Image 1 (cartoon, rainbow, N blue to C red):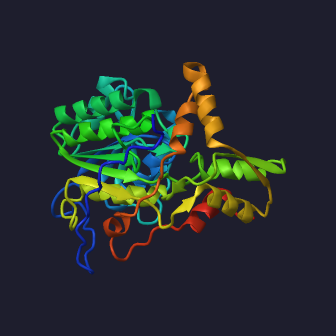
Image 2: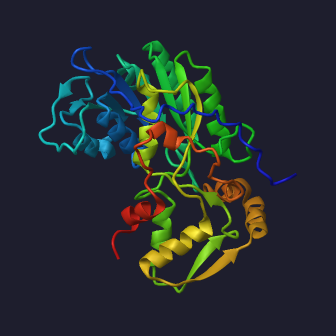
Length: 358
């Protein structure tokens, strides 16, 4: 049986907007309240990036979350918090970042509870499902992903939500041997069949603190060992993207008059493609460290995966399988989605954010 990955489905091209096109605000004082977008997803990177992008456009945003996402309230000028009984209580304090214009609500609950999903989607014009994949696998609720998507779509349909946006991965394929990629492809098919207008954004690895990529390389660079382990040969291609840039691309799905954007599948990634080995070298250089790289050959990892079977460490086989994929694209729609005057955050800036100053 071949280890070559099955190529993903083609990404639909985005019509280029006029050179002076700008993304309009979703609503104004003369047209009534701004639309409400419901957000469900991974709390560390994907949700904060998308929430900030939506708030900057003036949307009202409602997030289903647990206590660990409470700091999201700081992103809104006038956040409100839903209590467990469905009431609304304004927070006692909060800060307003420059440019934030929307209002944030937080619904306490989980995707496992239909009533929580019902509260999340009630009155919403759109639903954002943010479940990214990194090189360690799915970053949020990996064991229930497809079920979470089904439940979210069911709640959206019951609430007559008009638009659904799904943050997928560049390697999504419903025939993949790697579970998280296969389930991403399955979820995309569910999104495409939804009653709401479907928008799928296949993203490169999100890069930021606790991202499972740059953050892990930083930990490797900081430890006291004179060597570092490299799984395989380090040739896996990655095109990291800032969570806020990915969020801004996704937010376009909910803007009524966004030029050139139709329901479909879009690829969004960062400004630069590098191999994992090149990325490791950059991190070491940034930290002023030198380490001998000890490579674990791919055939050894493959044998270890087969020997471990279902008794292996959780996620080991998936991590090995992901080394055979390329988290990069030669058809990056992000520059067109962001508009002619926007600039993707480059890899150097992403490294600075994660690694800090030397």
